[in-house]
Image (tube, rainbow, N blue to C red; front, side):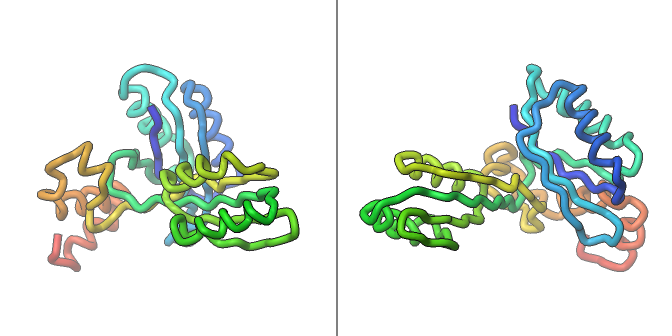
Length: 204
């Protein structure tokens, strides 16, 4: 089963190595890992997509607990079934003739991608979208000759609205618990700051 983990960690040269080492030791396959700055100075947010090579969901829970114990890791959250905004960037270089170029241009409005480079025989497409839409576009483009392709890997943030198709399928009554979801998310990420925010804001 595929799992998406959101990790907040202090910036540390060896931190990413420790995370990858733990994941591989636990027999998880890493599909993508994306590291970047987050809202807090001196910290990174890492989005990791892993494939569970064992049966059942217990091993994924154990992985989350083990990651939390690593040095410099502030928090780990399994956001696989939580309401999230997920995006990924992909660049595709295609070899095309005149007719194929016209066909691809007709797809621009459907998939809303950008053409960032054009020559007589090639096109480079840039697409930023949720992973499902990117996979759909890749299938459409399979009949063309793909010269090069690169994907950044997924990034994701929890939706404050708590509404998404996948999460509602997994938790059909989640729409009745909006405020509780928000409260739990903040409390899990920054427990000390949560106590202060509860005194400052009255909408929880």
